[in-house]
Length: 103
Image (cartoon, rainbow, N blue to C red):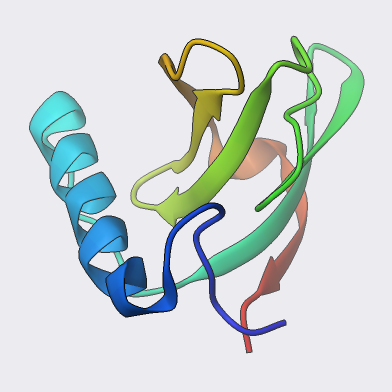
């Protein structure tokens, strides 16, 4: 899978991705890796979840995953389909059992 940010023109992909990284750095104050992740599969509170860029997240099914960022944990960055509110889902590294990177 080639890197993309949903609903973003190809010419703005990297700038949009950088603004997401900047927002996460500002919120969490953590160092971000250069890894570009397409999907995560993880277990939280004995429930299995997946986060896939371009699809709805599984917790509320109303936020589209825009990016998955790796730091000292994983950050699933999503936007509400109707209101455009932002949701960040924090996933501990020890909860993750499958990662698929963009090619």
